[in-house]
Structure formats: C-alpha cells, structure tokens
Length: 76
Image (cartoon, rainbow, N blue to C red; front, side):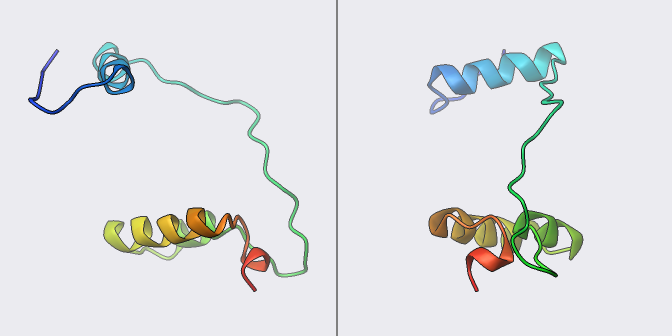
C-alpha cells in the first residue's frame, strides 16, 4: 500500500485497501425522496446532466449539502 506523509486515518486506509483489492460497494436499493412538485428535479442529477466542470460541480454540491437541499423545490 502506498503511504503518504499526511494520509492518516482508518477510513482512508480502508478506502485505499478497497481500491487496491478491486472491491466495489453497491447499494441495490437506493432511497430517494419523492419529488414534491410538478417539474421538480434532483439537484445532483441536474449537476451531472449539464456537463459542469468538476470544480463547479463540487462547489454546487457543497452549497447543496450546506443548505440540506435534495431537490430544486427545497431551495425555491
């Protein structure tokens, strides 16, 4: 396993082991909240579909998480 000077913590070590061993974790039944209005959308799906740059998508997702928003109707 490759070590880095500042890569401490069991979660990072677990993630690196999972990656090196080729282990995938899948959730077969993901729960999504119901859309509450007509023409409502999930924000993450919108971010992915609009070909935003990684930096823009990460920034928007940080804002979405801070607001606790899942759908467009959560913020409008």
